[in-house]
Image (cartoon, rainbow, N blue to C red; front, side, top):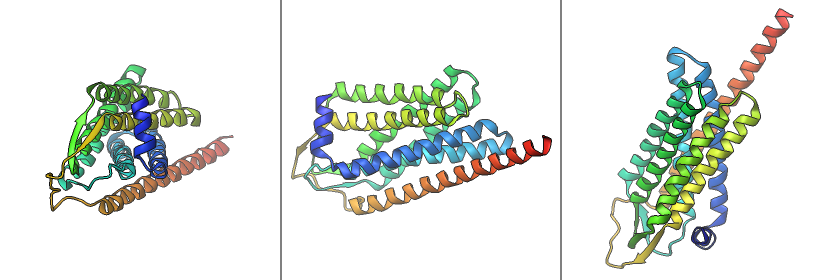
Length: 253
C-alpha cells in the first residue's frame, strides 16, 4: 500500500482530503441515523425515509469522491464529462438505496451484511463511473491488483458497517457503524486512486462541453448542503421523538 500512501501524500491537497473526510463522516452519520428511522417506519413513511437515507448516502459518496478529486493534482489540464458526472450521482443514490432497503428489511446480521455489500458495490460503481467522467490530457493506466484491492475493501468494509450500526439504537452502535462506512468509502477511493497513473499526451483535447473544476466545486458544495440539511432534519426528528417518549413516560408514571 506504499503506492497508495505516496499517491495520497504527494498528489493530493491534504486540506481538501480532510474536507472530503469530514463530509464523508457527516454523510455516513446521517445515513446510519436515517436508516434507523427506516426500520422504525411502516407503509409510505418507510419508503420516504428510505429515499431520504439513500439520498444522504449517495450524495455523501458522490461529494466525497469529487471533493477528493479536486484535491488530486495531476499537473495536467483536466475537466469532467457532464453526463457521466451526473450518472455517477444517480448510481450512488440508486444502488445504495437498494442496499439500505435490503439491510432495513432484514432482522438478521447476514441480511444487513448483504445490504452493506450492495452499498459497497454502489461506492465502487460510483467511483469508477466518476473516473470515467475524468478528462485529462493523458492516458489513464490502471494497476489491476490495486483496482481489485479497492473493490474488495469497499465491499467488505461496507458489509461490516451496516450490521454494526443496526446492532442497537444506542449512539455507540450508530457512531461505530458510521465510522466503518466512512472507512469503506475512503479506503475504496484512495486505493483506487493509487491504482491509476497518467501518461501525458498533448494530442488529447478536452471536450468543450466538459465541466471545469470550479463548477465541480460548486456542485460538491451543493451536495454538502443537502447532506447537512438532512443531518439537521434527522437530528431534529430524534429530539422530537425523545421529547414525545419523555412526555409519554411521565404521563404513564
